[in-house]
Length: 144
Image 1 (cartoon, rainbow, N blue to C red):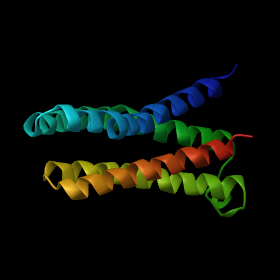
Image 2: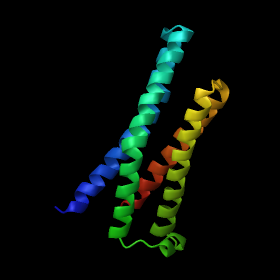
Image 3: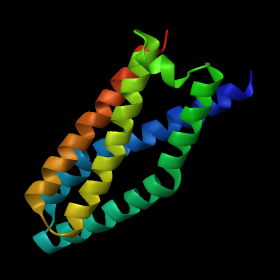
């Protein structure tokens, strides 16, 4: 067992928390709150859950994903030129771009949510979960 096993463990663990957290909030917390809480309590729950998840994502998950992803790419000998080659390189390049889009959508989601734009918040959230799920799909395709 090498240190790369540990780096991969942190990368996969952070990805699980990132995508799993998005899915849990979207598919479990939001619908449960919508059917059981009064509108003002629902809003308070969404604001607090979003704030906490955003803090964990910003301070822990995104830095771990970025650092471990860069380290793993370096370990595999990936260069910028690799991203233009068919197969592993182009799939990894697409995954990296979509991961950055996912982070951007999360930031946009937080912005529109704090402005109280319910419809925009919902659509940006759906787009974020969809893009994050595509990242996972591509990540799985990279494993031999």
